[in-house]
Image 1 (cartoon, chains in turn orange, purple):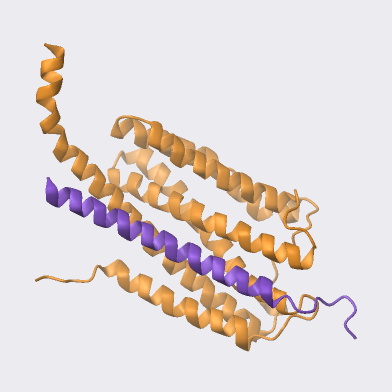
Image 2 (image 1 turned 180 degrees about the horizontal axis):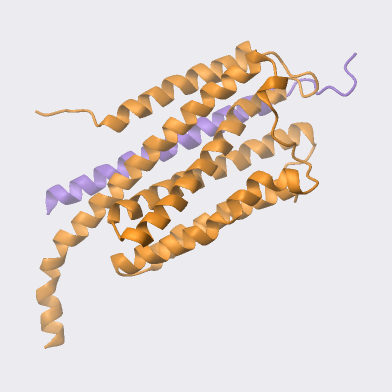
Length: 232
Length: 45
């Protein structure tokens, strides 16, 4: 029996090992932050999740352009995989941020510009996936999804730069040069881990999408006689 | 002196890590299930 392991599973395995390593470093090795204390340890999972979510949406944006440009189904499948993984990661980062906000700001939620644009981004990409599920015809569905994803992506630069452009409760990006190396290490390890995990999610979801397309294409001839009868 | 310093908060940290782990595992599981279902459909047809 051929039990060859798909190459992306090695990426997934590496991601799990790195997440466990990075989280152990973040929880037990990194020092407590001077003002935020132990609560700052949430950053070692929150920031990598946020970066990965934005990477996924960027991947979806590139795939959307590729899909519109070439019409190849692989781009469309990658777009679906990246958008779905981005939605999951974006939802998780909002929950992590909410927990951090409750501990440091004293509130679960604030209509701050960073939080609001992040929520809008999540809703926009949920909209992209919902729109796709309603569209009929594989080509039309691919085009609609691609256009919607490009429109939704407009919010990504806003999410990233809003803390610099406007006054925000959310802190701006910090530099590794001003942070203890023991704090930088778990952040970097978890960032690589989340990027690898996102890759695994995207590839698995894209493969599933392609398999569904193949199944629909092969199922089509069985339906043809019914259509012919209907037209007659 | 603890003025201006957040004391405790391990509960929030543990909750954040646990929710993240559950979310990621649940999504990975859903991908696995959907792939299996698709394979079963393909084998049937």
